[in-house]
Image 1 (cartoon, rainbow, N blue to C red):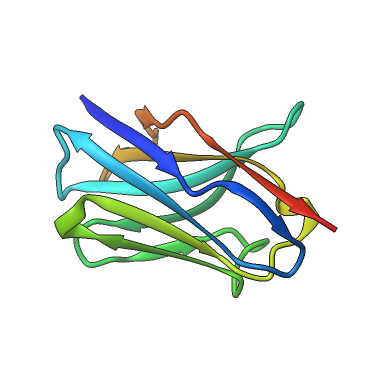
Image 2 (cartoon, rainbow, N blue to C red; image 1 turned 45 degrees about the horizontal axis):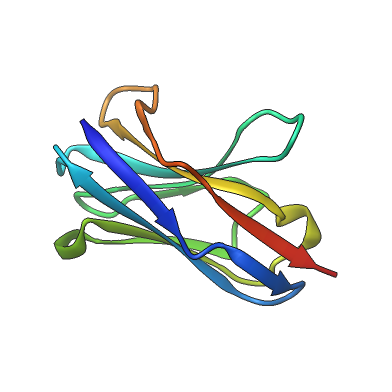
Length: 119
C-alpha cells in the first residue's frame, strides 16, 4: 500500500503562485508515476501533470502548460506542484495520485487539498 498526503492548498489571488506538496509513504517504489489531478464539483476528474520517480519525465495538461511545474524530491519521497499565474478557473480540489509504470490506472490517491483563487 502507498499512502499519499497532500498539503499546501489555500487562498491565493489571481495571478499569484501556490505550491502543493504530496508526501508518499508506505510501499513506495521508484517504478511509480506520480500525478496531480483536480476535480471541481459536478465535473469529471481532470489530469493536471505527472512525473516519473526515475528520470523525472513530465507530462502536463494543455491548460496548465507554462504555468504549472511538477517536480520531485526522491530523498523526501515528495512530489510538488508549483502553480504560477493562477486563474479563477484553477480553483478546485487537487489530488495527488500514484500508479506503476506501464499501468494506466492510478491506484493510490490522496485526500485532496483545496485551492481557492480570488479574482
